[in-house]
Length: 122
Image (cartoon, rainbow, N blue to C red; front, side, top):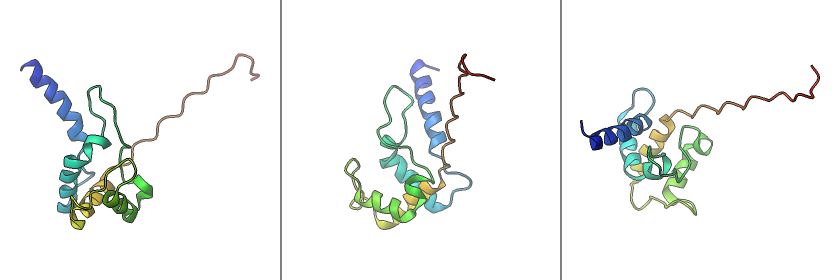
């Protein structure tokens, strides 16, 4: 296998793992995953190369887990994100919301271990 093929493979495997909905996906979630990968993934997932992640990672806890709020943000955007109400039909935005609601919440970062000060009494 060529070096280029290995690089492509290394890039695709982690992205595919992130893009899979939790559990068995229904047709609406599969459509949402496809639309997410087409329009949202570029900003909301971290590439495996040296590029930064531009927007927050999304999960079932995004915007408090409220589907109506997620729909509003996707439709109308924010000052830092474009709205998609002219690009996607309401049912397609609903599918993206269903997909986002299927993404497991990221594991909480472990708290750093407390370093014992040498002057502390036991």
